[in-house]
Structures are given as structure tokens and as C-alpha cells.
Length: 315
Ligand SMILES: Nc1ncnc2c1ncn2[C@@H]1O[C@H](COP(=O)(O)OP(=O)(O)O)[C@@H](O)[C@H]1O
Ligand SMILES: [Mg+2]
Image 1 (spheres, rainbow, N blue to C red):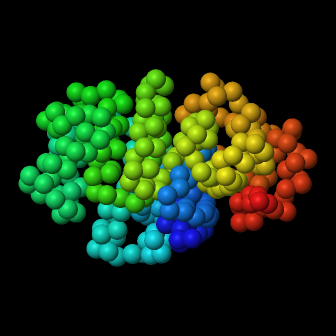
Image 2: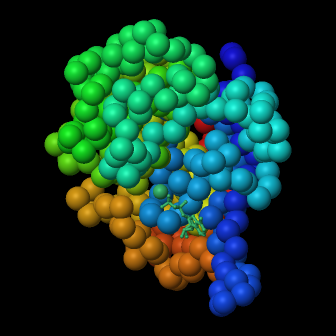
Image 3: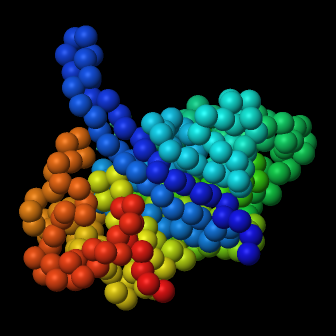
């Protein structure tokens, strides 16, 4: 077996809370609070959890678009935390991000040709006619047609824009793609098209995905393994099939017990848990202390299998 493409250990990203005219630090948001997991080459690692639990911060910390506070991120065996900028720039090509909002993430003043070709220029991968050819071929693959090149983002629908966002990410030939809720802002009717496009592209290009979502159905469909994130930590990690068949952590059980139509970006499974959960800025009760009344006996039974904040399953 090949080594994991991504090895994350004890990753922490805290944000200071500043207040007042002098910006004094009054507290800390523990957005990512000690996360450990590995991603195998070619898999789709699903990351699920409610809004505000730290999914985006984790995704960005892995790519060092946000500087982690501490911990380790190894990509293809190389430590990224503390890596000098010049070396980091070279690796960036191999790790790309697909954004949640295809409206905000595409520069409205750039033509699609420039948006998709920018990475090829920055990383000096292709210029002139060769760059044109590659951009056109990629747009074709996204089902957009080369005539899209001379248009601006606002001329496209949400789904088409996300196709442009995917083309931009794939232009530089990445191995790892972190997709941060890539379909959450799209109409339900086109979500499946984008997911299927991503699945096809993965098979064709041998991509590894970290797929972030709050929608459990999509995560189940697309993921090989799933990590459930809660208040900056991973509370359960299992194969997609196992997680859905027999969720072990009360939080996962709460997530799964909610009818899919009630799950949204702002959905709050906290309602199903007692006692009420603290805000991320002041988590006096850790994830392990949360109990749902219904799940109490199971929770006790599995306490011993919880190590480093992760619930390991006996396989
Ligand atoms: N730049 C920042 N400064 C301060 N707090 C932040 C910043 N970015 C995110 N947060 C906070 O960190 C927590 C996790 O946010 P985020 O990673 O966006 O969660 P998710 O993607 O799961 O919705 C939230 O409480 C959010 O308000
Ligand atoms: Mg997010």
C-alpha cells in the first residue's frame, strides 16, 4: 500500500477575539482544536459537521491558506507547517481548493480564460497558444464549451460558475483537492450534476478529495470514509457505510436522526443534545461530555474506545 497523501496530527488553529479600540485579546475561538487523521491516495475523505464547527478553517489550515497555531500537516510525506514560502509555492500546485460560493470566489473583472489560465501562468506550466488550448480543453471537459473563454463570471448560472471554479482548481494538475461545500450554494436540481462531474473527474484524473459538507446524504454518496467534526474536533471517524449503519458518537446519532429536509447550512443538531452545547469561543464542556438522552448508554459503553478525541471503531 502506498503512503497516505495527507497526514494530519494534532492540528490546532485558534483565532484571537479582539475587543475595544486597542484591539486587546479577550479570548480565543478554538476553530480547529486538535485534529488527527490521514487521507489515502485516491479516496474521498468526507468531513461533515454543522455550520461553525471549523470545517473551512481545517481545510484552509491544511493548505496553509490560514496559518495553523500548532500541529503537523504532511503532504506526500513533507511537513507543510513551517515550510519556507518558496518551497510551499511549489507544493501549492499539487493541492487545490474548490470554494463554497462560486459567486464570491471568481473575480468578476476577469474573463474565464484568465480565471482558468491564471494558475498555468503563475506556476509557469503553459503559455501562449498552449495555455489557450489547455484552458479550452478543460472547459470542454467541464461541459462548458470553449466559447465560455471570452465571457465573464456574471454571464453564467451558479452551476456553470462552479464548473469554472472546478476547472480553475484542476488546471494546474493537482493530486489533492479540498472541496469546501462545493454544492451548498447551488440549486438542489443541479447539485447532483456537480457531484457526478466531480466523481467522474476523480476517476479520470486519479484525484484525492477532501469533501466538506453539512449534507449527510451527499457525504454518504461520495465518501469512502467520513469524519464527523464538532466544536473544532473530530468526534467520530469511520467508513461511510459503517458510520451510517451504526453511528457511535451521540453527536453523529443526533446528526443522522434529523430528517434530511431539515438539514441546512445553519442546521443545528445541538437541539437534540442535552445539556446545551457551549459556543466555540468558550467550550467549557468538550465534545466528549455531550450526551443525548437517548444515546446515553451507548455513549458510556464506547467511552473506552475514544482516543485523542477520535472514536475509533473496532473493524
Ligand atoms: N478569521 C477568523 N477570525 C476569527 N474567527 C474565525 C475566523 N474564521 C472562522 N472563525 C470562527 O471559527 C469557527 C469555525 O468557523 P469555520 O471554520 O468557518 O466553520 P465551518 O466551515 O464549519 O462553518 C467559527 O466560530 C467562526 O466564527
Ligand atoms: Mg465553512
